[in-house]
Image 1: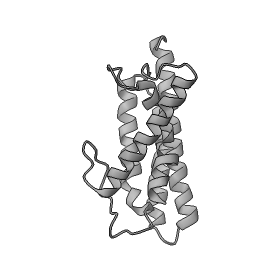
Image 2 (image 1 turned 45 degrees about the vertical axis):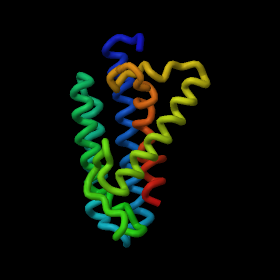
Image 3 (image 1 turned 90 degrees about the vertical axis):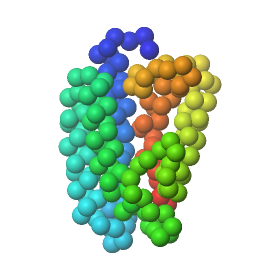
Image 4 (image 1 turned 135 degrees about the horizontal axis):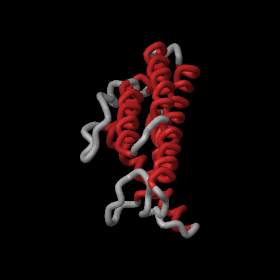
Length: 166
């Protein structure tokens, strides 16, 4: 993207801040709506940790540091993800996020849902004349829709994760 480093970092921060904010929203909603069916204290603790991570993310001084904080926040979120699953727990257990290839049913569904959301975002970007391959957070590689992947970060928990869970 034709931006200087600081402007690019600012855009990337916003993507990750919204990703973490939306992940917290999913946790808070699950606690509110299903507090008697889940370990609400554990989920609330994860939500509080994500809230604290928002401040740390805001203070990122490089994309590498931002990616590290993003990884930590994702680890916190996925540490309680199995709590959010209310249906067919015996058949759909979640031990942690894995991909390439997904090793269980939940991870396979998450990967599939992320692919659907990514392809939709690519389509929207191309429709409005924006190049989906030039991003600010994901490394630009030939054939990788980096901007679409940047934008999908914000949408993962509210669209894909909730779809898989409920």
